[in-house]
Image 1: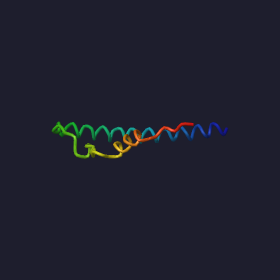
Image 2: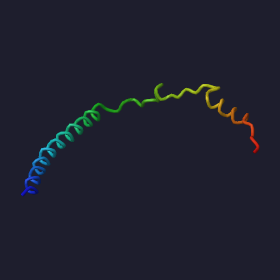
Image 3: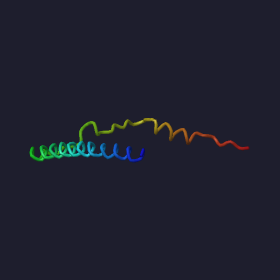
Image 4: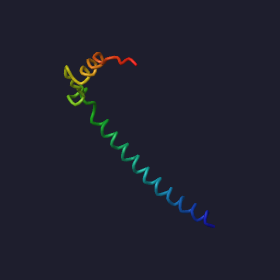
Length: 75
């Protein structure tokens, strides 16, 4: 009896969840259609936010130099 009761609860949830997903899908679809109706936008080039600045003499240079200065220890 407990299994049947739980099954009915789950089936009731699936109906409401299915309705919610259908509304969500319709909303997303209408937003896509609005974007298509607006027409093509001009091609965007990379913004300054995409740029990576690299300074000479950064930490990588210091690490390479220190590797050459290590002395070998003999046992």
